[in-house]
Length: 404
Image (cartoon, rainbow, N blue to C red):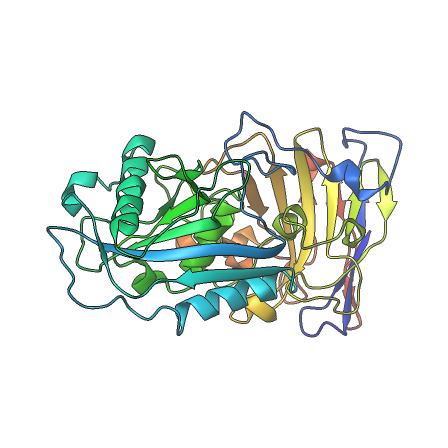
């Protein structure tokens, strides 16, 4: 069983017994070292949800160094100065990471707001549509770097794969007049100058209106990609909230509960192995969880991970309206699956809905807002395909049941 912190206050407790049936794929064992549930990345799955991705990821621990430059175009000339993102947007993005990582990640952005660097081609020539090719995207970044380096007094040290990169992330922001640069995307490959200088592990190119539309969390989402986190919304098209609702920034930048899943925090090194309980066998075990948004909170454990097989786990965590989730519509025990062999945009994480009967009252984009178990809605849930059933929920003097 697991015991989860209450959703009203981290000092209160709600009790959720948790049982496993014989359907669990790995026998003989209950709570081994959590490394048994730390499934490795699957190389064939682009941006795999597994641990240990070998993709020249930006660091998720310590200081992440970044550079931000601005560009305009022959058909979208901007004679002004770039917007002062260093006043509001950048500090907000830095604070978001600091809160989510419990102080483990410090994003440092070298903000060059002195001017727009002129691109050599019209903005319309870069074919910035959702079917943008990697080659065209690379050419766009090459031109931005060339424009930056061509300016007097701009020098880049001769950094290579052995002594580089210059920074971990390069942000390229177009003038808002460049309406042809329609969306934001992050490169999957390192950024080099045409002369071979190793500039950044990942490059982020922003859409002309996206920061205005999405605010600072857009930087957090794209920087999440730089740390090798996948998109949790459907690609190439589909309802943004299809797989996980509004429960993680990598699904919906504007979601009401955007803090990263416990699985992501564990993968990024923000949760210790000792803060994750791993289950690989059958039987019943007891766990005390505290909200994933805050450090501590009355319980040491932040997640329970049930290993289903070599590529799939079932995860249990507690969501509150604390920290980065201060605007959460609902709170409770959130249940979801993670598949390390499913690539970005294809549903590598899927939230399980404990309250499917509420769908008819809400828009499709909100269907999973009521997904968690709570004392106000469903207090039990069965996931037979995982070999997992819930037993009585006890909280605030109320007892309700689950049994496997």
